[in-house]
Length: 610
Image (tube, rainbow, N blue to C red; front, side, top):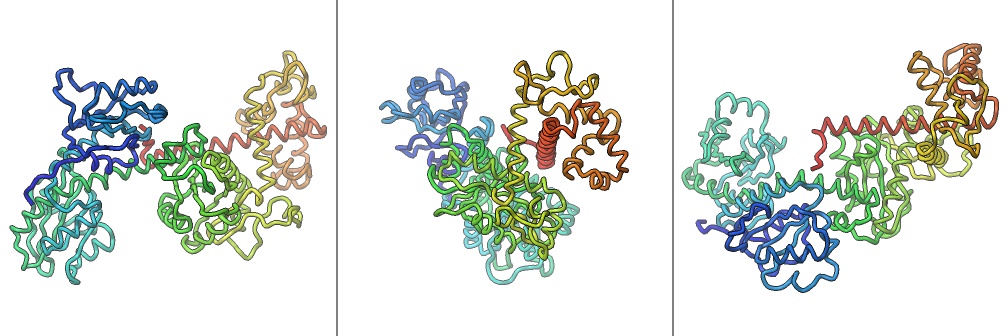
């Protein structure tokens, strides 16, 4: 174990899979000698052989790309800006051939500085690796160390969490048993090691640190793993008296060097991959014009059967279990948080044609087996589609379905928790029948899942609200002439909501005027109007729900007419008022979701965008 290994281009490409996209193939597996930004290269540099060059300027076209290749001919690889793949069509001959660098494209989800640091650390790790077996994961590395030394090995991260372990023999001391079972060194043990100063010694040391045997606890040797001075982990060896300490120390020193590139892949790529998957899935959900990079990163074919699911807010501690069981139900499921909607997005690639209802049933079966009875999950399944560039339609529908479920309020969720009741069917069920004859949202003790058919009435309302919100943003803010019906100065003066040819007032203006009045006077006029419409104009029922006398309700309705200039007794004016409340309620709900998403993102450590 004395021959130094060389950092090869193929290894760097392998270890950056996901955040660097290969655009051309490597003809020669050259040795990488350095990693530099293009502006750090000097004109007097004798050769670019073995150099990976980061070119930060955007590629403006195929001619520009050809010029960059020619300028850097002889380099091992060029890392180019996102979007470069657009200029690879009909590639001329000078992009290939002798001394042409391999072309790689940076993912938009990582920054140039992150790419530079990661590549230099990988190069450092590879350059320091001895002639150990070329292992791809820490578990294989731990097994090699254990077999070489006769000791039981644990590889941990800087927070003392176990990343890999390998045991020799059946006998485990109690500390090691508890460490492996819990996935981390027990808290009491860490406190003990901190108090004795042992962990501090390990953190500062550049060599093997020994801890002698203590009764039934065997001796331990530990060495810190460092990259550019940063502590990135530790290797622990628990060994019996039959193992020679000096021989073990020599192996651990070599193992620490061999572990660097594997540890860097484990620790560095994990946050990159999560961010990249979120960005890639986000571009698919948005219906981006160019889905090539996203499809490549997520290994998704352009054609195929897809389903999109949207989950309402999921507690962070429940998310890992949810991810596990969703992937058990659909092996190719891709999960990520969508920052725009605050929903957990799930994209499923399906073998064969599934309906949205069949996808819902399969997910519910997986959740029923896995989730605790406490709490509730709400999710919507959008229409199934057969092309990746149609997924955005399915996602929009899935999000609207979740919004529709939430619009049913706590009544639906409370009843869903008791499966002795029939599933919630919306307004039609409350009247004792279902107009479609179909079941609505399917309920387990833990989850409510729905398709568009299950919440058809609510979806119609949300679709109308979104269309009106879009129209509302384009309409002038004043009514006919110089007065608006919401000015409060011209009561009972009605301007048609959708109509004069001269100018149209805002659709949402009546509800906004009521909301402003309530905010100023601590009133409940908007809520009164909302309840009045919910009870279909039944004054007695509306008064009961509002906990006011019928005369008080009449007074409030009169005040609403004064402020808005619209009457609940006139059909056209009542329709305007109802649509106005619908639009404002929709805006309020979407705004609350965005704020909740921003808060949860802040609690998770803020945005990870570059």
